[in-house]
Length: 279
Image 1 (tube, rainbow, N blue to C red):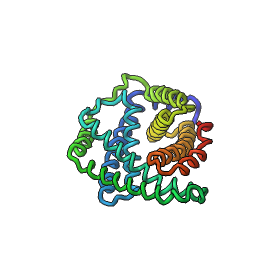
Image 2 (spheres, helix red, strand yellow):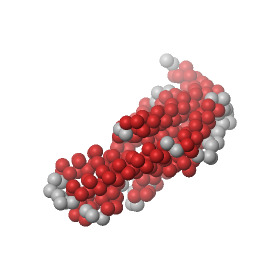
Image 3 (cartoon, helix red, strand yellow):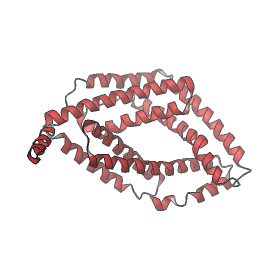
Image 4 (cartoon, rainbow, N blue to C red):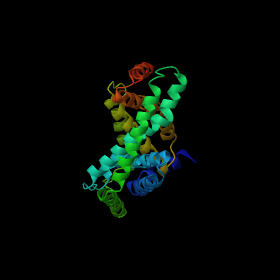
């Protein structure tokens, strides 16, 4: 295609009515699907208690929250009622997810590399964490069954239905320009958390990184872009590395929370010595 025609085609794609309209349609679809997946996987977990169902519910909800955050200036106001109920619900899922990952992945992998460390403390730790997981499962199942939780999720479904007829608040601005500036602002915020030392700041940095990932994925549903695709690959790679660090920190918190495994806690913390220098 001649260079002039390419330039004209690019300009046409960047017109608010065309580029923004397609992006708006995709965004509404992604929000609708992620919410539906959240509810379906939560319901599946209540019947099976399978770790993967809970994980997929959290992934779908994380996608929903990240998209809502990134595109907030373009979206109608979300319902305020039910926010506290959903916040507590996902706090419970986070507690259970930490125990699932610790018992099924992080602890067994670490123990294979350190089979003789804290041998006397190991059985007691596993028993305590299994008991914690049973209590966490019970608490989460009870919370999901509460009417106000169902009502809060229904309010979000109703909001998604109203979103179908909502107008895009872009004010005649090229969508690609808006998205690029939004991404740059997000990336700057992520850089500010890159060398954070406190677990809380590092956790916030990981949340921002996930927001960047889902924003990039949503933008790539509108049109192919080599630069965005390469950026997405880098973000996914970084997210995996940061996720491993988070899993190690979460297990340390679980071990130290029981105060009955000092040798294991000391050895676990020593094995995490490289994390501070990698942030």
